Length: 631
Image 1 (cartoon, rainbow, N blue to C red):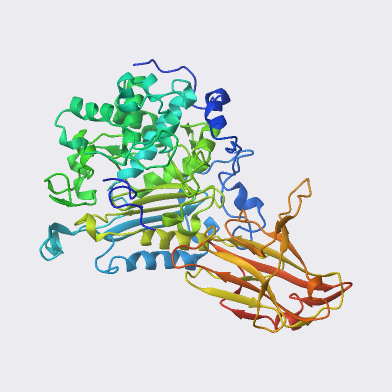
Image 2 (image 1 turned 120 degrees about the horizontal axis):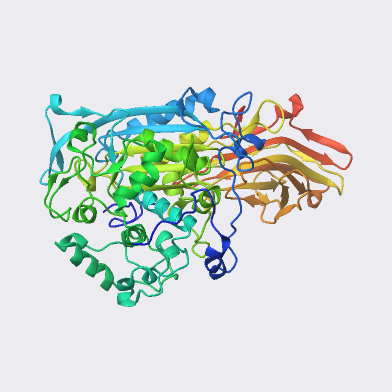
């Protein structure tokens, strides 16, 4: 079991090489069929990578100046490489980073019945700066699991191994990202067609009615494959392949999203057929060696073992194989059956190496003097190919906009993946931030870990560490980021006499879509609150965009991490004493970065009857849960 979405379910988890170079780009003709199949909903437009948005948007940036966040998609004149530095150098706030560590450490204790992990390595950064790299807990703590008492049998204290910055982890399903990157390289070089059928490369694959499954469907988990099958029960490679060839799709290809290891195992077979090289060699030659990721590989040597985090006491019935303590070998049973090298699992790595990969992708495919993908190819990783399946947004190999582990870092452009062993990687190109949480959460047994709480908690804090500059002045009203809460920001009672009365303000919002929201409401008696329709406009250079109506008087989801100008007509309350309020409401699961309101002004015809920039008016605002914030 490798991905958090399989087994236990997602918890609210020999063709010659082309002479074309890696930077030559992908011809649109190789993509057109798939775009048409999605009804034209897929937009292949450049996205801001390497911090373009972080610098250009007035809503984000470092305190007192632009953050060290590299260059944007428009020029890529500067592609940062990693160096260590403080929060300020990264354009981040220190206190949320400190809280990130405290939150992660809390899950070393029972949460609620058992520790979520024995230990972890946390890495967070922005631009070219790694502002946090912290090991916590133990890399090796338990020698066995006692199922009768549901306890871990610990090694003697002198044999336990503490986590270190360079501890190597079994990445589990994060391995899928490497396979996906290798596939996109072949698409870029013209040796692999995104909309070609898998059977056109592997004729035996057509068995069981799989003749129509495409490469794109493998990469986006829309092939119809069920989540996994016990390939390890077949002792030979031929037997395992026969099981795959005979597998019948659980749903019509392209009709549904279903996360499956079989997709990436199939993709591995295509890559090995096209290149004549095994997957581990491809990984080394095409990704890790060019990027200098020297602690990333399949089947780490025995000499690495003291620096590898242990995983599970693998025994029946919870494991498919009787192996005892798995330490230095792949945890996933099917990957183990394939000799440790598989498209869906088997890669080992450390936090710094993954940060190099993250920086490479946020740079548009380049790191230092090496380029592994073109900018156009990287765009495809961050482009949603699953518009037909809301909630299951997916680029080529990368998951997008998933609050269940990305927390408040989740935006329509945020990409990442998790691994069943307790690992996760999140990239937010809008803020140019990256977060790596590597934990050994199946140590000593997989049943101790449930949900993704540490991933969410740490992502929330990194999102909070990205400052939001007020639209005007030194502070703006901030809703906070608490879950299961309601916060209100209320203006004093105002009497409006004009038919041209209106509210104006600046608004910034980022919430869990549909579940959390920000509401503008009015009351004449202070109790019966009614929605106030409004319009928003995001100012942009070179044009005046049309106002976007919000007839229900609310916003939810993502504002683009930018300020919008809001106007609300108040003529319906002419001649009455009116109170206005903002109400921010969240459910008990996940949150976004929150909401900000600034520059509140109420005009009554030619008069300004309220202006939050006037000290007297500002002192009459009633805030419950909202705070004035400089960032």
